[in-house]
Image (cartoon, rainbow, N blue to C red):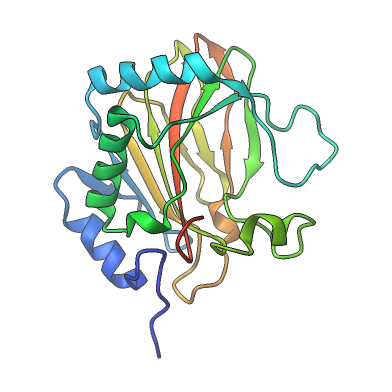
Length: 217
């Protein structure tokens, strides 16, 4: 059977092999989805630099298709400048560890969660039946892989929950999560549904990088 290319031009087997071979990378054991963790991927000093940039440019987060729930996503968002040397270095590291073609990557986005803020259960890919699918996917195609990095550790709460595999990932400064939003056959994988749980004390910062089927922009 023919392999299904990912955003990088790598087929899923090659992408998984590359991540699995990296020192410090752990694969979450599950047949339902492909999810990797890497503690200490970014140094605390670099995380502080990114937090400052998020605080300087944050705005209310949005969702692509309104579902009528005003509390569905209550965080703040920042579109980080890819020309910024700090952001460019993080971009380079994500491309290096995953092997994905940087041309297929969206600009890195930062998120800030204050006490009580959350992002309820969602998938990162766009639903083909969604009202905004053509708007967001007509050029670069749908999202394939996600790379998310925690920049700090809130005092309480703020974990990421993957309900389908009963996995809760706690925030740790510099920890990378990377997952394939598709199954091995290339179909969209609803088991990647995840939740940014409410922050109970302190503030949580993360950055997210999504890769697409085709070159971005």
